[in-house]
Image (cartoon, rainbow, N blue to C red; front, side):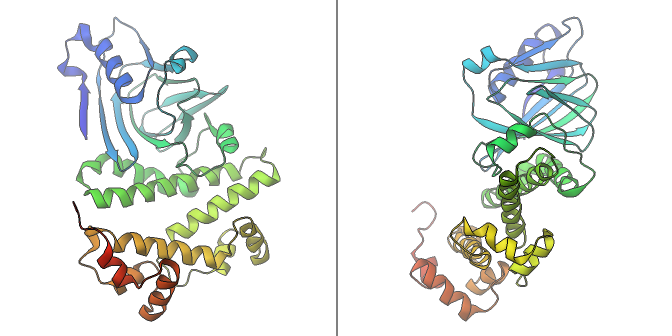
Length: 322
């Protein structure tokens, strides 16, 4: 991960302005407010994980970061950001809500709307930046969750926190193909975490609850595609709904639950067959990895979906640099 600023390497008189410049260059137009008489201590690092931006911030100097209406008019990326408090305490304020995050807690904020981050003690943070369309939760639901703490000691958040922290620490070690796949895993896990938290909110309308549940089901399926025993009954039981209700949810998707599972498995297989990083793996190995262990059955499904057998599809994929 590239170190954008290490405060101890900058003359004390220039640290505050340099820190502000780095923050703005990395995250977009922001205002940093701090006591000018207190020498700034800390560091900022940044990297890219596929389409996701990954940043780490460590500081022991009390200060605050502001995204004001005036700065929003100057532009900036249309992103959602997920903040993980690795250690210490940070305050996030957005949409008249305040989240006090402690070690392991998460929160979402929208970079296109005003917000404030306050560090009043030593903190270590990881920040993940996602394109707005990547976090597959209804926009209205997300609007109600910005500035709301997601405790890291239960549910999917207890799984997401340690993974996000490890990804932020090791992001430079991943090969490009692995990074792209890991970015999908991280995005799916974040979507599941946010959707799970949204389903616990009392203010959700029935229609919104159904959309959130559908997103949770999609994320659940993505995480278990490799299980050949994954079935509509398993999905329904995991979400404490009847099989009939689950089928009704998928009517709006113009598919069935089984059809969706099959489609997502085939898409993962198609992606791996086209991936040069998987060229040393047999077609049957790839198919089995995504829950399709019967080679003949997989070949029929693949040909029906994509117009040619999997081995032929693989041969037709362009070579790297070709």
